[in-house]
Amino acid sequence: MAHKVTLIPGDGIGSEITGAVVRVIEAAGVEIEWESFIAGAEALSRFGDPLPEPVLESIKRNKVALKGPLTTPVGTGFASVNVRLRKTLDLYANLRPVRNIPGLVTPFGALDLVVVRENTEDLYSGLEHVVVPGVVESLKIITEKASTRIARFAFDYARREGRKKVTAIHKANIMKLSDGLFLDCFRKIAAEYPDIEADDKIVDNACMQLVMKPQQFDVLLLENLYGDIISDLAAGLVGGLGVVPGANIGELGAVFEAVHGSAPDIAGRNLANPTALLQTAIMMLRYLGERNAADLIERALFQTLSDGHIRTRDLGGAASTTEYTEAIVAKMRELS
Image 1 (cartoon, rainbow, N blue to C red):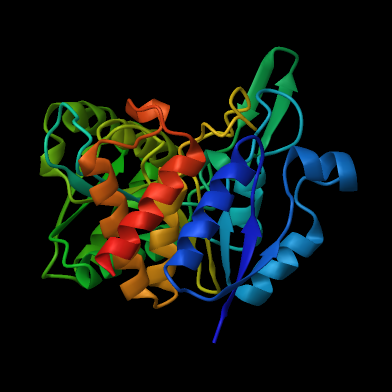
Image 2: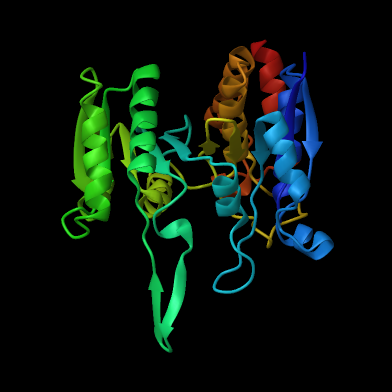
């Protein structure tokens, strides 16, 4: 039976990379009935809302969505559609696996870690106001409920995936109440998982350690803002946002998304690299129980990159999006 999945191509290069990913999934033999919707800047101009209600209704109905990059205006304009999606659908866990891809040389050697980010509160609650002219106050919201829930998610994930350690990242030495609550919840949950090592690091030290000896980390657990920053930092250790996947997971569903930008400068030129979204789709297929297809796509992707003959320009090659996609499809046929 075909899966029903909401598809949000996104802005800029979004339609090109989602088209490439849909092509690969179909070639893998997975039957998916896609419900495609626009969101972001185009939806705002057409419907007066960057996240129209039919998009949310589709995700609630299907429980799974695949989303391309959406542009968020800086300083002005509409609020982040990504943040709004997570809060509206209570997608409380942001999951970002970070590992080396065969054939892509990085300065840090073998690396395999996972960033787990609380997705619904902290400074990303967006509660800010002008106190007096020239003074703005932003409220940092940390709750026991959200902190406990995300800690349990991290330890459950670690146990299920055979991970050995969960490290909480915080600034409880300064923000003793807010980050202190987050750390306290982490420690209480850690006590329920004696088979998983638990430790914690102050966020500035953790950033230094990540660029000195990232192999010491396994699963990293962070509040929303720290998680946003460190997940991108970690992506830089393995080649950047163009090669890492991302997912937002809640109790009632999940949105799998490209974590890079919409790259309007190359939109429509058949130059975009779909690797990050393809890796994201691999996560989605495993979530849907299509593990064999996911494994096949992953092997084909990694072998294509290891061969080194066909790569997009950002990875040092000259292939178009279409050429790169078809090379992966051809490799899948060889491996089947």
